[in-house]
Structure formats: C-alpha cells, structure tokens
Amino acid sequence: MSNTFSRSFTALPEHIDANAHVNNAVWVRWMEELAACHWQQDAAPEHVEAYSWVVLRHEIDFRGNAREGAKVTGTTEILEGPRGARFERHFTFTDGDGRELVRAKTSWAMIDLASGRPARVPAEVAAPFMPPGA
Image (cartoon, rainbow, N blue to C red; front, side, top):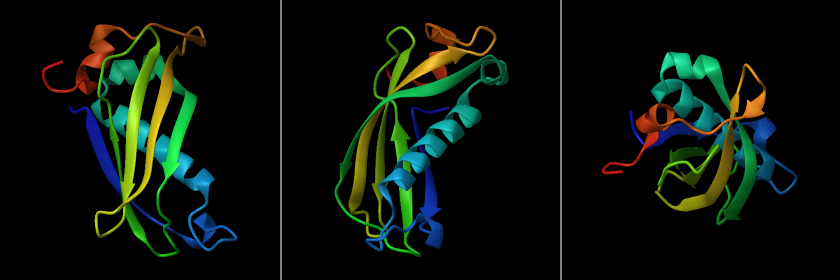
C-alpha cells in the first residue's frame, strides 16, 4: 500500500492527434487509468465493491509532447488526506529521459455505489493511500 502508483504507457497510433503527438484527451484518459489501477491495487476488496470515484476537476500543465511509439511513465501521488468526499491526486508523466511532459492535479469525489451519492471518505478507506507519517 502506498500513496504513489506508477505504470508505463506507449503512445499508439490511435493516441496521436493532427499535431503528431499524444492528444490532450489521451493524457486525461491515462490519468483516469492510473487512478483506477491504484485504487484497485491498494484498496481493500470490500471498499472496491462499495465505492467508486468521479473526477470533479482537472488542472493540467502540458510541458512537452510524446510522439507515436514513445514510452512514458505516469505516476499518481496523494499528498494529503481527504476532505469530506474529496481526495486530491497529483500526476506526472515523464519520457524515457526523465523529462516531465505533463503535470496535473485532480480532485475526485467518492461515490457510495449503493446510494449513487457522494460519501465522506472513511479513515479506513483513506488509510492505504496516505503519505508516510500522515
């Protein structure tokens, strides 16, 4: 369990836009994949069955481009605990040389699947994702 999670992505032909680099919408999709994989990996199975997450806000800085065939590493990190139903995630995507291509901060709300409504994040749900010493 960790407050960080990373995985690699490869820019495929379908990810490339008219400017010959990864489309901005693809970066958002990759952020959602990172967050979902982190949740699936580190949350307790009963929490995965009871709750889901929706994005409330994305703040994204595009600092570089990735072209077809490029491999990038995406990392998500949670730096602080939840506030009510909200959790913030930070994302970075780097190229093979470690150069930062994309940086983002996103806000997510936890949804109780039984009611379909936002729910305050219980301490036991947040615990596996808290930074060391928090």
